[in-house]
Image (cartoon, rainbow, N blue to C red; front, side):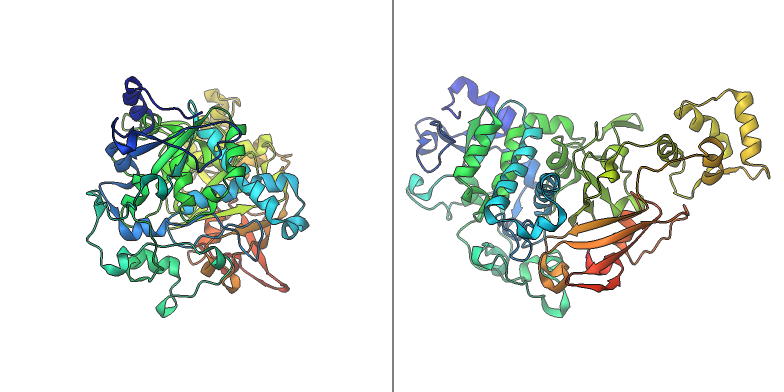
Length: 527
């Protein structure tokens, strides 16, 4: 378990974890005793300070007070949906949404749909701990490092007044107040800001203008009191959180899990996977997580891209997702051609996808297991065809037909390709339509995906939910026969779904009113 580090090991520890042990002889070098049960064994929690390199990687050069404030919340469940986590402010969705996704992964395996509302508080607590452990298992390099905060009594005085040159103190008084998560407010409706703007959106636009309850926590106080215990086995980690569940639910719970993930992964390993180590994992203005941080939470690797494997771009090897993920990821930014989401993310092992808008992360899931069944040969052909059709226009230039046939391991001899080109493009228009290609090579195509299926959507921001309460919204999806995509720029939810299912149309049942049906974007607010 966690041990006092010998001086010779300190340099290696900083390189691996980004945490420096306080100098010997100072109060920071003494082992903190008591306060936490490390899961049945005696564990020494060593007081640590965050290294400059690690600090810059996560926050940039400085932490703005309003950004840090928005990250101050613990994990709390909705009073209206027992297994749904509530997000109190914009920013930490890059941690909360992946945890929610892994929680739903386990829940879908264990519970029928009608049992979601029957979950007890103890069961949801267990699901949350299991989700946290699954994420940490993917990030582990040598040992698990659970980050906690040292009791104030151990330091002998509050550290809230300690100056920190890494904290931006230029914010006004309202921006300097810290956000405290009141547990008794877990189910209370969040009120809209002035002008009808959600608190989440207003915080992104004018974060310092949103009034927050006072909190004792400042960035410098938080970082001064960081410590961690080391655990070799995931069973010990699980036992720790069972016995110290408040570490997740207290005011700094989300931040502590973020630091636990990063320390378990290790600074050196994170930097080796990122393309640009100078780019911070948390946006210094808006407080949202980078794609590298989202990928780390979902896959255990801090790669910056969402395509499959590596791609050579201008001679640079840019890393993407290297295997089929347990949890999927789709984003409206792909439709806007800012990125290309690969097969590994779009087709996860479980019917759960984190969905990305330009400012927020939500979660899509389904009880339909056939959504993640192995691809049929026809579905493989459609996927490969679309790789040569980046605009999604459902046709390819005639000259690339041979490349498509090669990719599908079909006959690709020049004479045969020329024969097929004349059959598929009889009018010599220079293009080959997807339907013509499929009818020629896969006339008896069978689908593994059903034509209709239910989809459920989670958004942790109360104001982005129907009636301002966090609940799962349920919709019915219909896959149309036509491959023509019906784009609707005013419906970002449907636009995002079409990056995964190009011919999808959806309707949604209002909660508690199944007779009223509207487009899913109305009920499942993406933002």
